[in-house]
Length: 244
Length: 279
Ligand SMILES: Nc1ncnc2c1ncn2[C@@H]1O[C@H](COP(=O)(O)OP(=O)(O)OP(=O)(O)O)[C@@H](O)[C@H]1O
Ligand SMILES: [Mg+2]
Image (cartoon, rainbow over all chains, first blue to last red):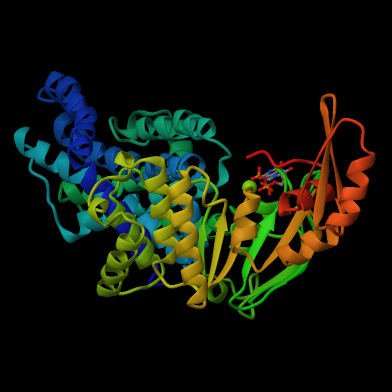
């Protein structure tokens, strides 16, 4: 199990090397949302009983931590098909579990990085977030779930092009639809029923409730971690199956 | 140290490796030759757990590579055919990650990195990102990395590709030395003079099948120690003879030009596979 430090250290070193680039690129999307929708609509409109901008920021945290955690999928892909770096892990005496732990921790770290940036923006837009242990737990669940999903997909896809397809047709729609930027209550019943089952929906609910100091939605919180555990387990097996 | 029994690998309809049964002894310097596509890399990938065999078994240091992969992998170092370094990171960071993957302690990693850094002539460059290295330096770093954890068996898939003549000689010296210190070496190469200079035994692979397995000297002797090259117009044919007398007698009967020389491993290779090695 100790071998996970090798995989995780690589992630840390890469993040350190790209810190500034990441900081900037992780900031752009949330900032555009905040300016366009937060300033544009945020002050006058209320959603689910709070000003729109207050509703929006936790949604952006859910969206940001999800997309940035999931982005390790592309990274692993490049490492696998282009640089063959993944072979260095596969040839080393580390278990598939250790590789999974190292990679997923790297993804979680990116998720928290994205979260931290948005929390700082919240200050500038005068939205007070409740950054409690429960909030961090909700973000952790989301980052864990999507890092694990990223691990599965990166092991299953056969090329980098497949990976972009997946991003376009699965991740981007999910990022928009799961209650991140609008209230799911506004949707027709059937759509609501469908979207509820996407893993980002309970995560968004848990992150928003905890961030705004509302009662903790236990069911949503538990659902997020269930998704995470299932994806992670499948991820470990996906690594096992990735040998040619 | 390395034992395989009827090891086979199929990719769809192509058979990359067929019933390889091989025993590389502890401390041996083993050369693995074969034309492009013969199955050399496939063999190395199976033995280093990067690919699964379709059939057959293999052990490293007595550990079955499929039943006890971690124990087997602990014993080996790999220099892959394609350089797989983290280009963004420095040489030292690449070594650090490797050391951690092999569960070494930090001070150990530092010590070993210094040692192999000096050895590979990279000591002064280890703090620089790998994407500033020349091809030869990258190659040497992959070798230093493979040796970092003091493996008992070193697998090298064409490690001297991309090195200049002096770099290659230096590496030969290094390999000889670590082999003398007890490391078993499994070397895949296209450079036949390399196998001749370094290896205790050579296996020749063609179309996934092992067609010869001997010491270089015995292989050369079995093919014929003396060669007569006969040029007729555009074509060159080589004839093998056990000694100079027989060769001389034959050469006298040839129309056109004939040259007599000692046979080398390349002749054996050509005789067995019907192909010259493209390098
Ligand atoms: N992943 C793969 N999928 C399909 N076929 C493969 C794969 N890897 C290797 N092969 C096939 O297996 C055969 C052996 O390939 P291998 O790479 O082992 O040859 P090699 O002896 O290392 O050649 P070279 O000297 O060119 O490196 C070739 O016919 C190759 O096309
Ligand atoms: Mg090869």
